[in-house]
Amino acid sequence: MPCTKCTKTSAIIEEWLNQQGHNRCWYYPELFRQLADLYGCVQSAPSALPPLEEFRRGCTRYQEEEYNLFPHTNSTSESNRQKDKEDAVLLALQHDLALIRRGLEIHGMKKDGTTECFSRSTSYDTLWSDALDTLRETFG
Image 1 (tube, rainbow, N blue to C red):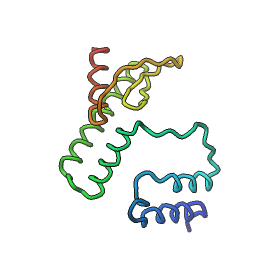
Image 2 (cartoon, helix red, strand yellow):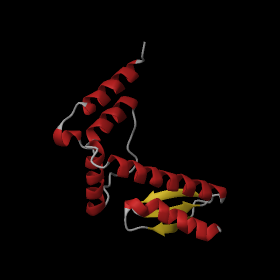
Image 3 (cartoon, rainbow, N blue to C red):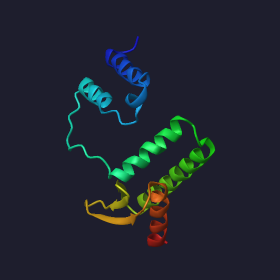
Image 4 (tube, rainbow, N blue to C red):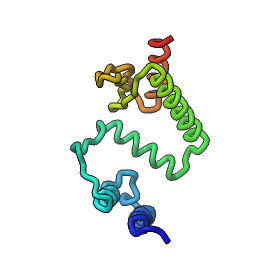
């Protein structure tokens, strides 16, 4: 028998899955507010949206994926982005750095907490490949 929180969590997620139109959008703060309330989570930083153009690109990407408009292209490019991200993270970890994404920038954080901007990109599509290229140049 599932725990009470699990049952409530499932109901919250199912409610979102059954939404239609704009309520079906990937941006679903009410869903996360309900989950945060259920688990007693407290927001520690103010909410912030990305710049409008980046936000719109996210909406377009969501529509393409939901409507499966470009299934082969999207899965391939997403797969490539994910591989570049994993390779960049692994390379950074090998040099005692954690990677942090801030908008279209990738920063490296050292053990002492200092950060350095490694890469700035002009689009989300090239964000991780740009970072990986820069890390490879930096660390050989």
